[in-house]
Image 1: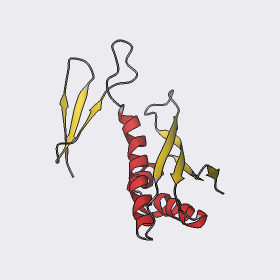
Image 2: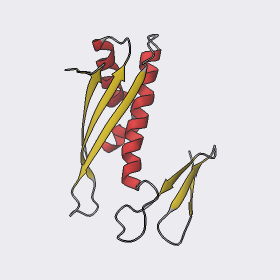
Image 3: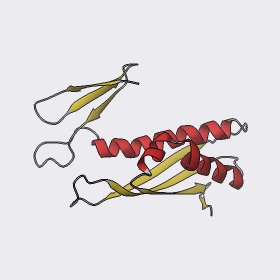
Image 4: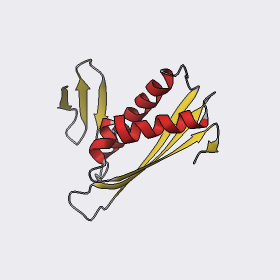
Length: 142
């Protein structure tokens, strides 16, 4: 796996591309002047957690012939800004699923993702407590 980063302007804006040519803009969201035009590296980590788990959940459900009509996630990472480096110490995820999905299957898919399959969360759990909740068709599952 390889990505290539190139500086876009004379500030902190960068473009990162993968081997397929897909790109992401990266910027410094703590800069004090100028407009922030991309995601920060730490935001990209949270996006990676969401994307990795979303792929897992869809794959797990698809293997059971279940295709959610909607999947959305909210991921909130907490850091201690006074510490250097300022690592995530807690990551809270809410998974919103819609469709004809049994409660047990929705919970199992989410649990398998975060406890076994999601490489991104498995890396981050070394420094952060990762919590996830599932909301299925508007109902919070326990």
